Amino acid sequence: MNNSESAFNALGDPTRRMIFEKLRDRPLAVVHIAEGLQVSRPAVSQHLKVLREAKLISINQQGTKNIYQINQEGILAMRNYLNKFWDTALAAFKLAAEQTEKENE
Amino acid sequence: MNNSESAFNALGDPTRRMIFEKLRDRPLAVVHIAEGLQVSRPAVSQHLKVLREAKLISINQQGTKNIYQINQEGILAMRNYLNKFWDTALAAFKLAAEQTEKENE
DNA sequence: ACTTACCGTTAGTGAAAACTTACCAATAGT
DNA sequence: ACTATTGGTAAGTTTTCACTAACGGTAAGT
Image (cartoon, rainbow over all chains, first blue to last red; front, side, top):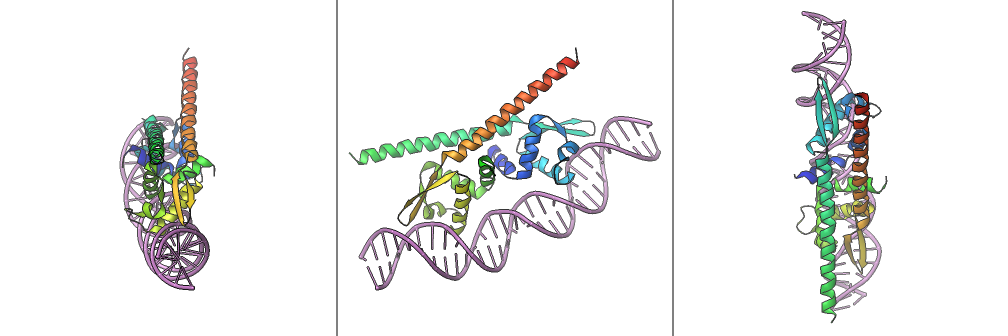
């Protein structure tokens, strides 16, 4: 599974999107990420693992605290995927239009 | 659920990503989408429904054939989400850096 | 040393969702 | 008319995965 694939998988879950958006505004320790969320702390830990493997977030270990923060790499992977996807789709569309035009001459 | 949410949900599934990528190159009827895929045609139909509701694809009905094609709307929703997300994260980061700087004066 | 705070992992459970089978409706072609 | 093609839906099964409870491990503070 490449970067963008694991990133799409990770953001496919609503709870993980909430965590992801919490970290958008500031880096947070796991306890604080779990606050306000309706799942247990271990569940949050598991989600963090998935997000980390997708390179959407990264750890900054400080003593016993694990401070999580946004990682640009995963975001870039998704953006590149979508940009390239659309470019390819558009090119295919234009090519098909030209083909049709020729056939009608 | 807004647009980008349902889009992320939809692309969270690997089979749906495959379908989505199949349609990138050309519009296809359901039968042809199912070809090569390791799931039954009804399963494909169900996936198409999810992708359609996320506005990632759209139908072009031609007689008894349902031709599916890429829909830019869902893609744009995701791109906008990611762009805005990153902008916000960057702004928050800069603000935090300035705060820290002031404290160290 | 002892206690407290923080957090990852494992095992087991429950719910969501992906899948298949069966069925039916609509159009196209003969 | 009838036959074939196309494809959506419903019911039921299977599988996946998100979740909790319990445990252990590490670092900080006293």
